[in-house]
Length: 402
Image (cartoon, rainbow, N blue to C red; front, side, top):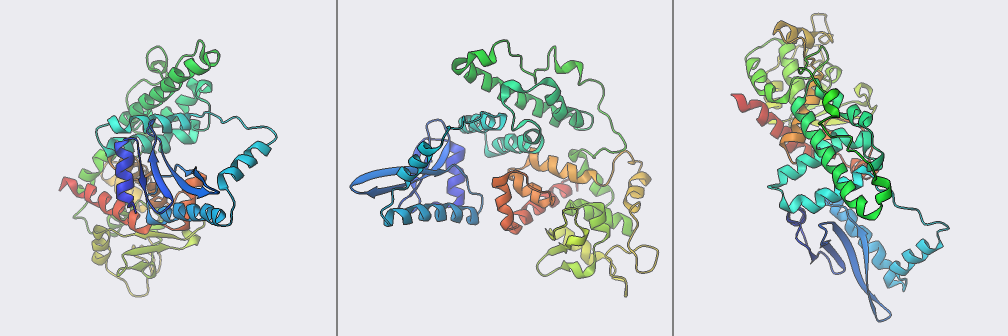
């Protein structure tokens, strides 16, 4: 049987081939570089092969789901039912075959699959996947490439351009490349659609007129993630509750109200987990936060005041710090142009640019709702151990300026 690591290694190499996983379940890499799963079976003297899914499992749970799908189809074979014939009959019975829509996202996935073998390492591949999933797909992922306008590209880039210039430049380049790839293929298949088309993500004589000027630092901006380790080091020795709360917020990538409302009863130091009740979550759902070793050290350093349930008590008896406490720390350090909530945005940028963690792991760490239906299926579990490693890596990054 293939392991998760072996599957991901095969995908990264992108070399065509087939590998047996179970008795009837096989993993394939097509000549185009597209990975997929299929079952092989024999029925009435005929050897058959049927594709199942192109999902790349990131956890044992996801791999088990693929195996279960295989077993479901094999059960049909044992009953004398041909699952491939059943699928083809259902397709033929469809009154009008639905034209498969070519979207920006589908082109991007094909482009990455075709090129991953030639890229320098897995991190480069993941950077492409993460930046597109984080910034691009939510805006234009569902659109046909030839229909995308400059205004829609600007909708992606303008929020980034003012405060995350380097990230915005990379995103722009990647969007331009994907649309260019779509046109290169489309011109040979449907030239009438692409006639006189101009790439809306092109810089020269296009976006340069709309994305100019100096990088701004406004009252709602996030501190760029490369600056955070030095900042974290600059406040490491401070002992006041407000600064401790800010340190905890950065380490856990949580929201201000979640941090300030943290109670001792929510912290399980043995399991290194902070459980935030649904009543304090924006999503209205309980959220478990894995605590890194540095976060646990910070908790251990806090003085527990008898009768006060909060980790970060305020001046008023049995109350936590006010919502302004963290912002006042920033202002006191002459960094009032950055806001505490911006550290969540910086965490997401760091994960997209510097790590190989899938987007859904990062989104779950931020307690975001996952809109993609396939990725949302992962929420049946909270991927605690994968998120724990992510937070340990973030903690190590924050300590890199020491």
